[in-house]
Amino acid sequence: MTIIHISAECYPIAKVGGLADVVGALPKYQNSSKISSKVIMPFYDNKFTQSNKFEKVYSDSILLGNDREDFSILTLVNNTLGFDIFFVDVPSLIFKDYVYSSDDTERFLAFQIAALDWMSTWKKLPDIIHCHDHHTGLTPFMLQESNKYEAFREVPNIFTIHNAQYQGWFSHEKVGLIPEFNFDNVGLLDWGGQINPLATAIKCAWSVTTVSPSYMEELKSAANGLESLLSSEASKCIGVLNGIDVTVWNPETDPFIETNYSSKNIIKGKSGNKKYLCDRFNLDYNKPLFAFIGRLVLEKGADLFPESFKTIIEDKNASILLLGSGSEDIQNPLTELLANNEGIYNAFIGYDEALSHNIYAGADFLLMPSRVEPCGLNQMYALRYGTIPIVRSIGGLKDTVKDISEKNGFGICHQEITVPSIVNAVNRAIELYTDQKKYKNIQKQIMALDHSWNNSAQTYINLYNSLKHPIND
Ligand code: ADP
Image (cartoon, rainbow, N blue to C red; front, top):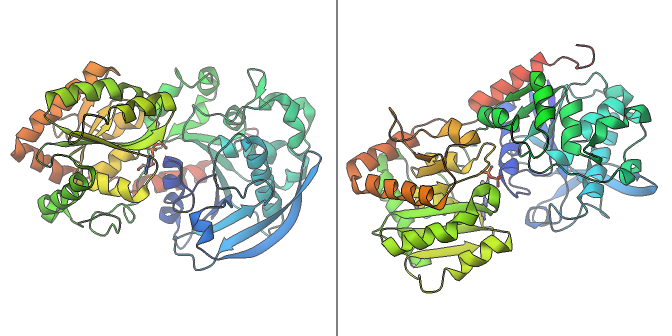
């Protein structure tokens, strides 16, 4: 079976968030003697592409509306990723030093068309085309409707929603960018008067998955306008919990962290990493260290941090470290809070992969008060590194973290998304931290949990095997 994943991100090549981690891991776990899982992604101008060698395997041009754009398909020389990877290079559109920007409609359409044009030339078409998020949302439509892709009509495709907040909307005025199709079916592209790639994918894909079972349920009542669509398409929708790549996220071998450790020397290992963080960020090592890693956006509940942190800082029982960037109205108050709170609170505003690993390793608790969390990978990384997650029970957080008040519970969960509920959760964590015996037992317990991709990769294979053409079915 040949599986082709089409995605805008893939770790370690280009990462903005969890999508990259998933696409950089799932194919690795799917590959076996009988399965060949590959990735097609855009060729960006970034650190990875600047420091690796690529080989051209195909070149041609695509028609994007009235414009002809040259493209090449590249592959990685000395590939150690654990799966084959191909890059769509459209120099005029995609080869930029960013992944997402305001010109995404043209860029990701060019990407999808070039990928499909190239696959059309293959002697044998893939067995499965697996598309990820709205950047590839028009692929199921084009496979089903575009005249030039007629040969793909019987190739099953599956679409995974990693985040339904972002849908890739654009105006019907740009419909001419999509390769010619029977215009009677233009309604498939529409949702609320706009072309909506996410909605289109939900309508056209043979199967739709989301990244956790709870998120799938939640989408029926909160999907940024797509609630009724998801309810009506529910029979082909399923939630499959993401896993983590335990070869990348392994405290025993992680090259990014200061002190490697396993559950056998967890105290020494974690304290070495905590010391590194506290020295670097001038924080009090003797207090429990609470950390946050992620986008500073409403979805993550980050707007509640300034007020929550003020109370926690006043109480003087904790150290706080934040890594992230995002909208200015959230970022600015978090930066302003740095003044006068030296030694208690620090923040690194930006993106830093190595620092994120150090924080998973060195923090005592990881904060995730998300309003929306399709799956969330951070809590699973935290668990693997013996860091106790403090989460709002929503989406994938609900599916992966059990409160300490429950039997075999290991995390701190809260239901509300308010400042008092975050502060209360932090106070519960401080209380747990003072009971060092219980705290250390939980650390050991969480490091032993298995959140690797093994189970879910197989769930996807079973799903691929069960796919039936939605129109013939
Ligand atoms: P998202 O909604 O952002 O995709 P996920 O929890 O699914 O959230 O995945 C987030 C991924 O991005 C994790 O690997 C996390 O460590 C990483 N990450 C987020 N923000 C940063 C940052 N500022 N620096 C380094 N890594 C980050």
